[in-house]
Amino acid sequence: MDSFLQDLRYSLRKLVRAPAFTIVAVFTLALAIGATTAVFSLVDGVLLKSLPFRDPDRLVRVQSLNGQTPSSVSQPDFLDYRAQSHTVSPMAAFAMASANLTAAGAEPMRVQLARVGAVWFDLLGVRPQLGRAFRDDEEKAGAARVAVLSQSIWRSRFGGDPKVLGTSIDIDGKPVTVVGVAPPRWNYPEEADLWMPLVFEGWEAQPDNRGGHWLRLVGRLAPHVAVEQAGRELAKIADGLAKQY
Image 1 (cartoon, rainbow, N blue to C red):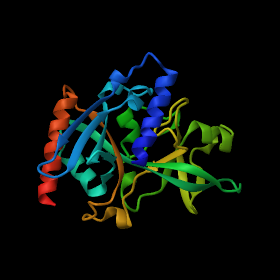
Image 2: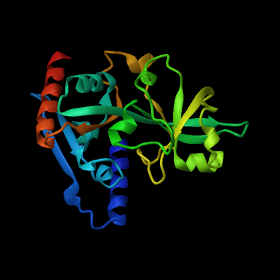
Image 3: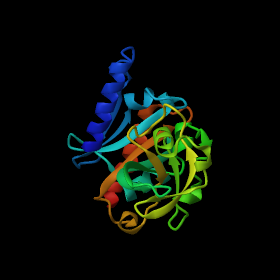
Image 4: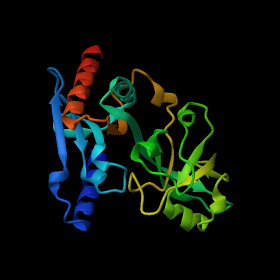
């Protein structure tokens, strides 16, 4: 619920700043899953349309509903949606966390870390201003830890120095290599200070943890696919998962 309210507040701020962008831009499709009380929804949100993404009208938020309460998605369900969906592709998960950032011997600072799928920047159609985005193998367990910095952190913490690329910073006491800097006036999720690949390890990788809803999903509609068509397909997948598990 917190993530939904966070997105709603962000959307309303965007509407205030851009009054020509009306509430008509919000489209929600909810479909019942079998005889259960769960509902699957695919949301084409204001927060996505109002940001500088490539073809923002093709971007969708995917979430589950328990009764009337919006909910995030479990890791096993996300992997199944991503593997089985042909109408929403690519699809990526993300999760926010607070972390301690230490660099160049300075005092640690608290930052908002966005853990995102390796395809994140490509999915949104955004290129880093400096360096590169993530590679597919960097979201695998045991991969080298890398990060893309936001403009604000790059300028405030590193003085806008392009030589930050390739340097090592500490995130929660672990070394991380800076591989990119996001472009100006771009942040998604809005509160992110930096991004790292979403690597599933430990309890996060448990295949039977379908009750642990902690991921938010963003996807891109496949070519020539309407949002209603995608909603029907994803609801069918969700129905199959509900019957299987």
